[in-house]
Length: 342
Image 1 (tube, one colour):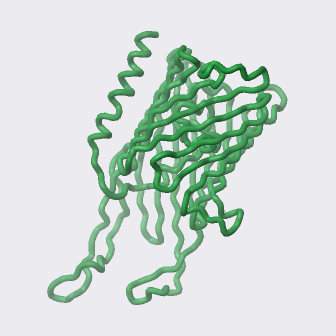
Image 2 (cartoon, rainbow, N blue to C red):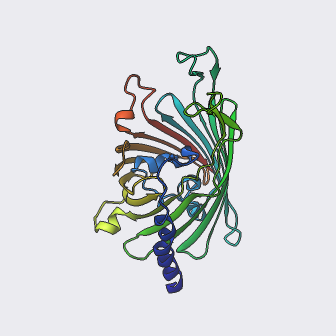
Image 3 (tube, rainbow, N blue to C red):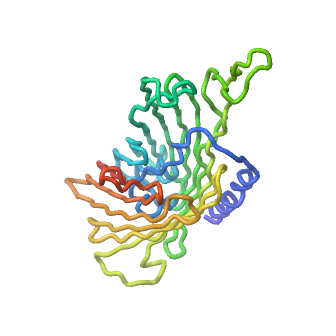
């Protein structure tokens, strides 16, 4: 056990080194990969790298799949500004302890049609186009001991914008370690590392022109790096961590997380969860050092069914500051998920 603990600490200390050395000013490809999906974790400020131990672990930290004891299918819907929607399906398939757990997930980010505008027709040509992002993922996790697990994910990603298409592949690698100090669980993950990607084909660069004809230059699209992010976090039982006496029918969890994205500044998130009679959960969290995201609120219901079957319904509200659309109820930043364990 001492060896496992030492390996975990070394991994946490060494993993950021390469990322901190990367200084990439500007945008990265496939920004939708950075969107949080697991609604329980979103309700706790998105600080869930050490918390997920079910199908939602494919989004937070694949090492969490190793702690799943039941098969589970998860459906999630995310409302985003500008009438953008992000829908996901995830599946967790635990086998024996020797084999481990596999996870599958599919995500589609879509939006309504929008008008084509050109330099000659700035008000629109009358043509409508659409855009969407697609993600297909496969994950694997295994518990090495009763305290330690690792996980890996591979994803195919695609972005369609009118007639332009970009394809790419990304990977995640994560660890989870359950300590014997006040029920603390430690987690870390490196997300979305992979080769650069970009749109195929070429475009007319209206900012430039040739010296002889005065016409715009035809340029090839350039590739961009993936949105690599390092995350490290902790989750603990409130009663053990703070020494509280919460009663038989009341449990609580506290979470905290540090993030280092390759294309932005560092962030810290935190949150709480109170669970009553294993059926109703109330959640809250906050995103610190973030340009738009601020507070989150959430609620969850668990409906026991026959045998080891459970139905879980989760909702979260994730305020996005000035980007929050308050014009109608349905346009606000709601997040919903429905999962079935069997």
